Length: 106
Ligand SMILES: Nc1ncnc2c1ncn2[C@@H]1O[C@H](COP(=O)(O)OP(=O)(O)O)[C@@H](O)[C@H]1O
Ligand SMILES: [Mg+2]
Image (tube, rainbow, N blue to C red):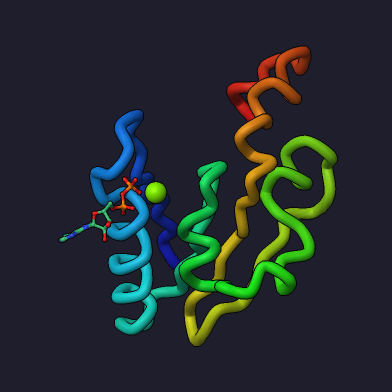
């Protein structure tokens, strides 16, 4: 079986290259033949808009999955590269999930 690896680029501070690193390292790994799924959890959705500039193409985001329970939306970008889009709604996800038990596991 193929080994799976999760790499997270996370930092409270803005402007430190989280999005740029995710986009370039993800795209390079895809070019090298790794199957890459980018997961955008940032309410700014910059990673999503970088790969899908036309917002009309984004019907569902990770917000709809986390908060409304729809299946995780996966958008194909190019060979070996796909993304779970974020949206501005993610900025309110923490509030929307406040009353959920063990929300940090979600
Ligand atoms: N390696 C780099 N060299 C030069 N500029 C960079 C580099 N990485 C990021 N930047 C620039 O720094 C700014 C912030 O990067 P960004 O990835 O949006 O940060 P974050 O996602 O952490 O807020 C952007 O204008 C980006 O183009
Ligand atoms: Mg960013």
